Length: 421
Ligand code: UD1
Image (tube, rainbow, N blue to C red; front, side, top):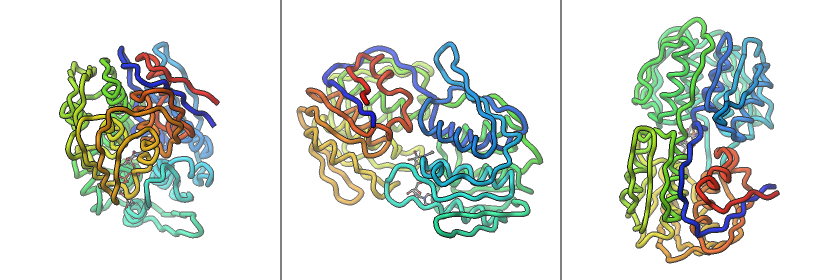
């Protein structure tokens, strides 16, 4: 299994372009299943989760090719006109959580879908009850047996769905099921993440009639058919936030390009509060940092609140800040697995349930650590970059799920980081 070897202590400086958003491209790839004709997806990140999505599309009978553009970005072409499959093999379901996003799309297209429970990062229990109950309300007959979910319907019907929690995945799955349903679907208490707006924009270009994404009420008028389209995926706000934190952690000075600063407002406020100088020029963010002080309390919340996906990385940053900070994780039950690994580098962190208290230390020291999940792994990279000495980060398959060539991106800012087998 691959590992990253990081020699810490080098201030990161220079210019870095951010990848397309993982959490946008995955539901968009599922949406491509609904088109008659070619869908062309630009700025598709080269990460293992998109490879998993391509594998699923292939298993369902879609034709997928890709091209490397002259600027190095990746364009994926999907033609699902002959994708008549309705069953996703168990090994593919287990590779990532977003595999569940195909459920709404397959059901919408084939009126039958068989999947097993999705995999993905282990952050505590991750039920899909909200997805299932919404699809049932839209007319699907769903049975669960031995870990498999079998869904069938004559048609799907528009209805009003009041989500008990603004789940990102459930909101997207309902949108995918509702675009070709009979009548109008309204999602109340919808998730407001920017990736949902990106999905709306993609589907509308395909001929869907959706409005309200980005607010807590989304309206979807079912249409008869959808066409292919071309779309550029929005910038990845979590990758951008990770690189901003990496620069701050090393007391560096860099320009992070291809960002959507609007999507990063809670993270940028956090960075400003802890002493970073942030400047925004359209889609570029410059960051520099001389001294870091602790931000008292960080509480993860659904968008536009502080993203749970930035919790681990920001915690890594706070390990060397002056003073103490408190992190409260409200979205996932068990998202502090990185803490034990940060301890190995000399961090002082106490956890109690969903609360972690970080007491800033003067130095972190290079160590052999293990990536425990996607964002936890990125947090270890940020800590290693700011530590004295060499760190080895094992099990980087987690990191590869969401970061497009992280070692190349960080090396372009001067980091001493290499991948080894
Ligand atoms: C998405 C993101 C992930 C991010 C998360 C929260 C993608 C591909 N992934 O994951 O990076 O960390 O949003 O911002 O977009 N829940 C239920 N029942 C359900 C669905 C969810 O109880 O049916 C709970 C989950 O267990 C969790 C919370 O709701 O505690 C948030 O989950 P959700 O918003 O659905 O996250 P994902 O879509 O899995």
